[in-house]
Length: 159
Image (cartoon, rainbow, N blue to C red; front, side, top):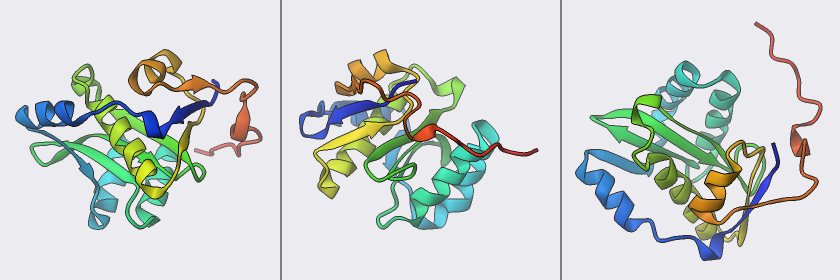
């Protein structure tokens, strides 16, 4: 899976989508530092251990670089930046039962906008498995020759 580059200074306006989701009771927001354990457990239970580790890194940043989608005070999706590497977006995930509502895109754009506010002009989406989605959602373009990129020589995870 290739890495992708995003022009942060040319992001689509996501305010209408955020408001639409809020009317459905789905809130997109930056996670609070005291929500680390809740967010980590959510990611570990629904996605992977390595992503849960990256969420922990997002909570070590100031401000926290993890965004969550909540419904009825429970996490239904998350997105991070500045975890894998500086300037990188991800990981991100939405519960299967909540997919197709625009939550993933809202989380993506919230994270990318935060990176723009940090002073970045560009962001990297590492190992983007959904290249066509990222092209449409934020104008990302594939970085030629980026496979395996930073993901080479990864340690094996034991059981």
